[in-house]
Length: 301
Image 1 (tube, rainbow, N blue to C red):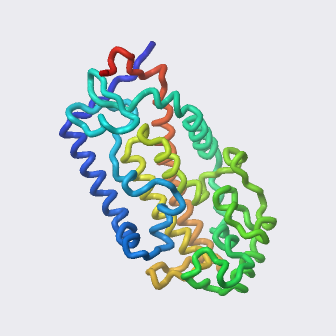
Image 2: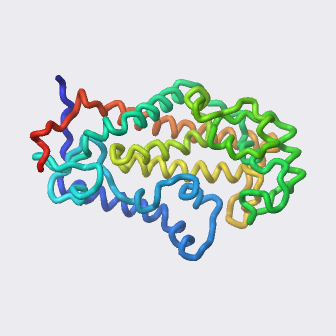
Image 3: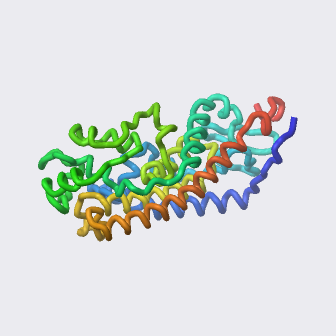
C-alpha cells in the first residue's frame, strides 16, 4: 500500500506559524470583539460571526492540517481531534472515518460548483428580495435606511428578473419575493444549482473550510475568511441599504453603470474564490486512509 510522505513541522516552525496566524486573526476580528463589548452592531463586519457559527476564538486557534506532524511540545496534544504518535502530534486519522459523510458532501459540492461557468447576471438582487414589500419594522437591518425607500426598492425588484441559485440566500426572501425567483433552491438541490459566480457560494468557502477543522490548515481557513469579509462588503454596497455613514459608497445596481461595476467586482471575486476552491479540493483529495494512516502501534498510550 503506498503511503503519503509525512510532513514534519519543527517546533520553531509551528511556533512561528501559530504566532503569525494569531496576529492575523486578531487584526481581522478586533473590531468585532470591541463592538461586542459595547453592544454595537455592524451590518458588514459582524456578518461572518452572526451568519456563520465559527467563533473568533475558534478562528484564532492554529491547526497545521491533516498529515502534518508537530514535533516538540505542541499544545495540540491536549486538543480534541489530535493524537500523539511516536513521531509527534498529529490530527487523528480516525476523523476521516467519523466525518466521512461531511467530507464527501463538501467535496462533491465544491467539485460540482467548480465544473460550471460563473453566472454574473444576478446583480446582488437577493438582498433586495429580502426586503421586498416590507414596511418599517420588518426590515432585517432596521438601523439603516433604504436608499430608495420601500416603494423604490419594490420597483427595482419588480423591474428585474431575479435568478438566485443559493439556498441560504433564497431562504431569507420575503414571501412575496419567492415566486419572482427563476429557480427554487433547496438544500437537497444545492449541488445541482450552486455556481462559482455566486457571492454567497464563494463566502461559503469559509464555512466549508472551518467545518472541516482541524483537517484543514488554518492558513487556508483564514484566507477564506478574508475573502468572505471582502465579498460581504460588495454584497452590502450593492444592497438597497444606505451605508454611507459607515464609509461604504453604494453600487447602484439599478443603473447600467452600477450593474457593470458589480459584475466586474463579482467576477474578480469569482476568480479568487476559484483558486481557494482548488486549494480546498486538493486538501480533501489528499485525505485518504488508503494513502496515509497512523497504525495502532505508533499511537502513544
